[in-house]
Image (cartoon, rainbow, N blue to C red; front, top):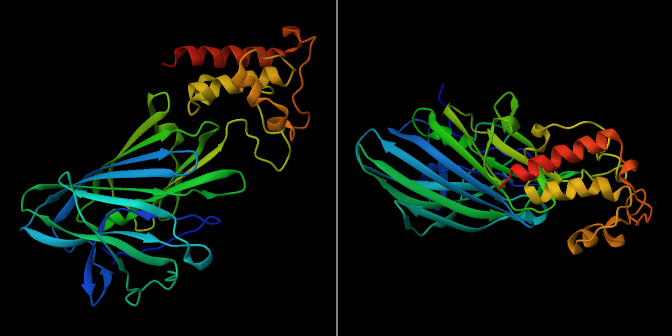
Length: 337
């Protein structure tokens, strides 16, 4: 059954969720989400690019819409939420395009008096970046949005999220969603990738293919989301130095055998650091300046035993598990371009 498109935000500690384009009705100076499926425009596909940078993440989304009906002009909006103390907003540098032409937009407040779901916390619902788009009959209209956002955080991870469920406001299921992730964070990797659904969630970490050393892609077909459905991504320290126990309590590369699959989400430079961390735990004396810096006292003073050079280091000190894992990691490094 088609429902009124509701905007809902689930918080994990403090982070923002930003949404697919949807369409609105204008009432006075405020906007109200329109009924799902009340127009004959379907979202044929969307391509979601999410780039993880050290201090923030970037999102760029391309939409292909097909108008099955008559030519119509709609107020299309990208809803967003403000959360935290004093409604601190975490989205910035928003831009939008229609048919490859950058367009102006307005920041309009959303009227929440229409809401039927009492679980909706309207204090979390802020505004939408809106613009008018004309959808020609029997034609494809291409739109694009991009923005930057600060990360949310959990006790051990950075958190990024994208609310794709708002795509349910258009006619028919979303025919195709392509999700492309790029990791430019030197010392963190995507450790958990979740596709949240109405009544469940799915770990999609194994559904990606690598298209370059730090870029990954997956595709979903015929998605009929609920309005709260999200993609959520957790980025974790590559050495699993996350607490509450001190390092190397959660560093497993020296304690259990690993396979190539265990290394999928790490970049080639990260694999090098992990491999050399095994040596660092035995006091190997590094010649490379970047490794000397990475394992310096200032960087390892909170370890159980801060790194110090062992002048008597020998490969014989390594356990068989460590030797095997070093070989597995090195082979994977050599196979990366």
